[in-house]
Image 1 (cartoon, rainbow over the protein chains, first blue to last red):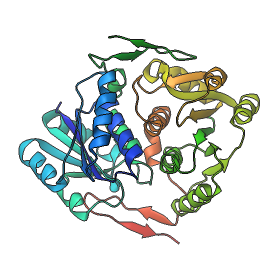
Image 2 (image 1 turned 30 degrees about the horizontal axis):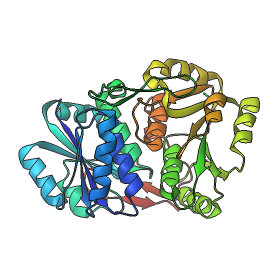
Image 3 (image 1 turned 90 degrees about the vertical axis):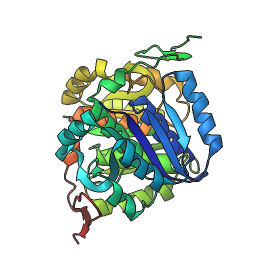
Image 4 (image 1 turned 90 degrees about the horizontal axis):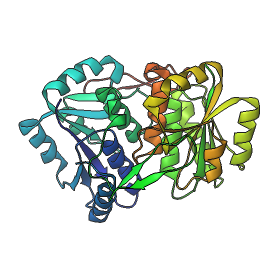
Length: 179
Length: 179
C-alpha cells in the first residue's frame, strides 16, 4: 500500500481555521501520512497543530504549499495518483475496488476543497470521487474514504512516541501521561 | 432498525456555525432522521439549513432544543438508547456488533459535542463510543458511526422530492433540476 497525502485547497485564515483543523486531525487519526495546506499562508495554525499532534504521537507531517497546481503536478510526475473528493464525482461504492487496487500499487494524494474548487482540479485529478452525491462535509468525506481504504483497521492504529494516551472507558475519561 | 436522532450539544452562534452545519448535513446525508441543536438559540442557521435541505430532498428534520438534559431524559423514557461520541469512550471496532443489535431493536440518539461536554452526559449515555481514541472531529466520528451502522448502504440512499439531483461524473459537474 502506498503513502497517502492530503491536499487541503483554499484555506482562509479566519473562516477555515476550525474546519482545516478538523481535516488535519482526521487525516492523521485515519492513517494518512501528511497534509499539505494551500490557500492563505497560516504558519500560526500549522505550528499549533504540529505541537498538538506531537503530544499524541505518530509520524504525521503538515506543511504549507503556496502553489497547489505545482503540488498536484509534482505528485503526478513523481509519486502516484490523485483522488479529488467532490459531491459531483463517481459515488464511492461504485469505485472502491478500483481505488483499493490503485492504492495497492501507488501513492495517492487526496484533494479536499473548502469553498469553490477551481475547474482545473477536476481535470488534473485521476478520480473525482463522491462520498454519496449529497452535500455534506469534506471532513466526513475524507474520514469515509480513508476508512474504506483501510477497511476499519485505521481505528486501531498505534501512534508511537505519544506523550498522552487514552484508556477507553464505558463512562468517564482516563488519559495517561507516557513521558 | 430504529430511528436515529442526533443531538448536537453546545452550539455557539458565531464560533460553531460552520461545524454545526457540517454535523447537520452529514447526519442527513448518512441516513439519520433528525438533528436536535442545543446550546445558543440560532433560528437563522436552522431556517437556512431547512431551506437548503429542502432542495436536496428527503424527510430529514432539524430543530432547536433549549434543555439538552430534558431531551436526553425524554429520549431514554420514550424512545430508546443513547450513544455519546467521545474520544474517551470504547473504541467502535470493539462494540459495533453490540450497537448493531441495539439499533435493530431500538431507536437511538447519537450525541455529538462541540467543546467541553458536561460530565453528566457521560453518565446519562448508555454507550460512550470512540471512533479511534485519537483527537479528530465530531463530523468524522458521526459519519463513521453512521456508515458502520448502515454498512455503507447509506451512500446510495434516495432522497425523495428533491429539487436538485447530481448526475455523477468522472470529470466535471452535472446537476439536474427536477422541479
